[in-house]
Image (tube, rainbow, N blue to C red):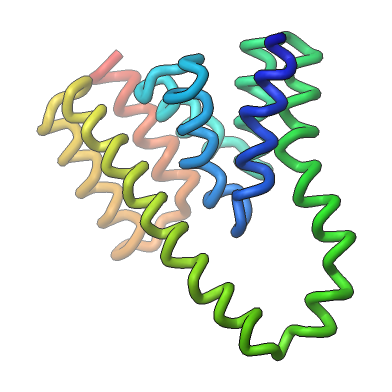
Length: 176
């Protein structure tokens, strides 16, 4: 039964995660934290931080990690196949349709409606992470990491991987 639950937990984000891995993150969080209770919000945010620090698509790393934790190697395989399967099948099937109708006003309108929805879901997830960080690490650590990360990313233009590694190091030294 757990393998079926793993399949469902990642197949739904695989279908609805329009926009790739970042769009799937709140959907995966909903499944593994809220629906199945396999992780807490804090555990999910830590797993997400580690997954972001590694190269490759984020959704497949999450599916493989969570699938392995819940169902071993078969769980990891099913999780990865469930998250990439819908996209792969739909891309192959619908490629000709999109090429044919790429200039259609309906297709443009559909895209314009989906993007704000994804932005709202990412905003809700970020709020949940900040709320959890405030509870777990305290407001000063959270504010410090947020401000320093913003400055490094936006003003100094440091690569995000280095900011993530720095935040992991800070957490290991001061929050571990």
